[in-house]
Image 1 (cartoon, one colour):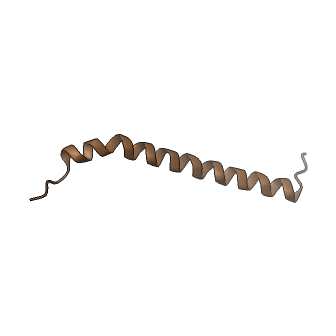
Image 2 (image 1 turned 90 degrees about the horizontal axis):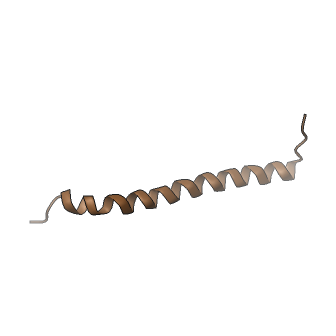
Length: 47
């Protein structure tokens, strides 16, 4: 069985959280860039 000391465990948890948030933010911006032209085409027109 492997031993993970508290310092390494905290570093691993912090890295995992940062990696997940980075992926979420990256894809959120990418999806927004892809769908923004479609919103302009099919969105409601101002009267």
